[in-house]
Length: 197
Image (tube, rainbow, N blue to C red):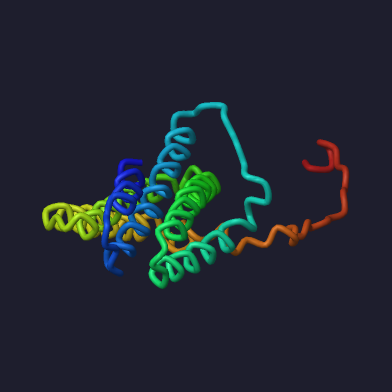
């Protein structure tokens, strides 16, 4: 959440917005928002709390929200209007909150340890983006270390669990809800204890 607030404040307080500053502010907002709500969803799942909240049409939201953010980044870099840029960043804030919750909430409990390491990696990349945005090399270096180490740990955990990182994070994006598993029907035959012996 700190990354989101800092990115928004930096964009609004800065007089001159170059492309690097715009991209860093957008990525800080987007990654920070995903990490924030994703971490809340992971905490609720692992703590055993009896609380569930699914977004409407949750299986169809991830791809449109992601494409909307890609279009928003392109628009932010292309425009010099602060009002349009503010609208893009506020949209990135709202959609990143939805994405973080929706993605993490859809991941199974068995894969949640991998999801946590991925979220930890995200927090590092958000910090790295802030370093570029604020012109602070220390934030960039520390964020890169956290992000890369989290990514490496996620890869190692997936290999140990014989899982694909892509399937853990994006498996629910491509799940087809229309197809139901075929049920195998077998003929029922009753027997008694004498026939078994």
